[in-house]
Image (cartoon, rainbow, N blue to C red):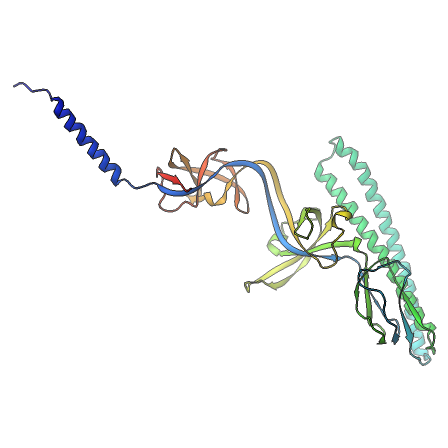
Length: 397
């Protein structure tokens, strides 16, 4: 029996049937999934902790009335500059009864104690001056060593931070000497006013600085020990930031800090000086109890760059825990757990391909990629259950 060859008409029918089958297959095929994507890039990468803080003066001194009496009107206003020894206000003492033997002995003991405090503060100042001289000497020797790459940048920053702490300690010791002398003068005034009340007492500024607060302005009666003015030197300004205790354990003295949103355009530089060992409980805005820790930050930028800052001003601090350059990174929303490891969907010619990924550090919305992805590749963001290996995807416009 002889088979006949298919005619041209039969071939056309067969081709038409195949086209119809292909069209039906394409018609019933699932449409591509609409997705968002991001590009795998290299760039700067940093891990940081951001918290809101406020400025404070390291050395604040409240000037109070040494004896009870009538306070004359205080003419100084907040912001006025004063020098050590300038007259601040005048008190007309009340007629005081003569001191009995016990009260006089107590007053003399207070004066003797004040004299000892002056000597102790002077000795502490000499010790801090010696420490400052040594720290500045080490800093001068370290600069040429850094230029010759004989020491690391981290070692130089530690030496520089030590010199900055020594300067702050020396400044505080100088304030302590001035305050001790003021206490001695007050104790001496109590003995000199024994049985007297007519001679007015002028109270002088114990330190050079600015008037922070005027607690009494109008003329009136005051009691001994009542505060009248608050004075400090704004050059000793520092920043106090309360951070979560879980973040505080990752901070170290000397760590770099960026200070932002303080009112100026420039980002100020700072360094962690002290992390207080005791925490405290604070209720957050959501009503959750949080354990917080105070962290004290010194300004590393020159004084002229933060001239407008004062006491108790708001500021935001960013503590730099780690930073690197040319780090391969991807949005953290592109990674998900798969078979007890990290994975991502890479878009290749409109097809989602499952790719195992070795992830590293995380910084906010970004994640470091150690292995598995290459620069320039497109990855699916927020992959859902409708995306599987080989799924067709279409980028959202």
